[in-house]
Length: 94
Image (tube, rainbow, N blue to C red; front, side, top):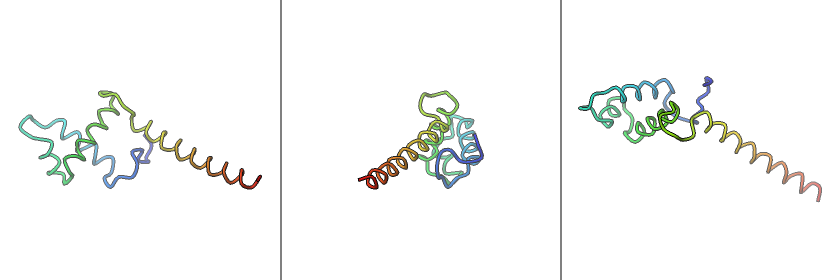
């Protein structure tokens, strides 16, 4: 990955998210995800989402990985821009 956060705007740095996911994956059976999330000051649902994203990025689960998601967002942004440009040209030609 590049230095840019491909997952989109997020208040937590990628390194922090990776560390929290690593701790959550390596905690013993007596420690819940909710406890890990509370220890790091994040909401449990946020940690579950980070873990799901990490599983997809690692190839453990199927889905669109972070790189593909970023490419898809960029493609959609570009399509929207091209449609707007096309509309301007269509109006100018009329």
